[in-house]
Image (tube, rainbow, N blue to C red; front, side, top):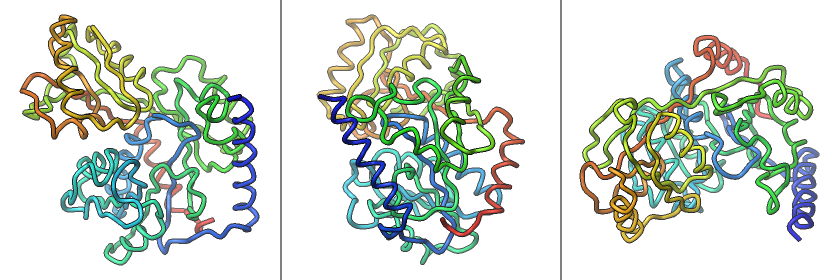
Length: 346
């Protein structure tokens, strides 16, 4: 039954893409350039760290990046919510959704706005922003109603094609042929990848991009969620922890903890974007004694949803992750050259 539903879903997505391509469904255009960052699969592909990296590079180069997000599971859907005006964070994570709130806190000087209709949120921000504005369409590969100048497709090295099946039988949002829309392809978590040539050949079989870039996701530190005290990752080598996560690909988080030589005694994994309540956390903390663990270890996205609950210092620690290219200087030049030559939105 699931395979049959996947085939029907594939037909619908192919038809949708064709209608947009032929101009039979109208598309909106923003005044300033748009860079879309997205993926083909549901769940985590390391999109948020990449968006943070991209916004940082653009900001350092003198652009005014604006992150436009849907704000998944946030309260703002049909009205524009400015999460950050570039000076301060203006709302809570329940209103914006965890990912926009996290990006707003990580990116000083960068505007972040959420709305299901990204054209309307982008138009509002354009009225207030000045300088060389560039919109970053967060999770935008399937958001075809908004024209973009550059489509960056992220492919997760650990599960590049979602099991090879579309929803609901697999994790693919679109058929693999949709990779043909991409201008740039980035393989994320490439530090965990084995057969690079094979994956590259599979991507080139569906895409006309001339280059594939490789990004590593590196743990750059740990902090205490209660006190915000910062630690080095190596300070937690051998520490007995329980992994607590509600993200798209929690297995990778556990793998990261083990890679940095933490002793993962137990895993408490919830559905993606799970809205934690106090009883969830209380139960997790009770597991510490049961499994002989010293603390809970969680992700930055989970930390956004946990910080309003009751817990003590030293009970919850957060692993900080950054996305970095193989050759930072070379990729930065490559990316800025692409941005400098952006055509009109297509």
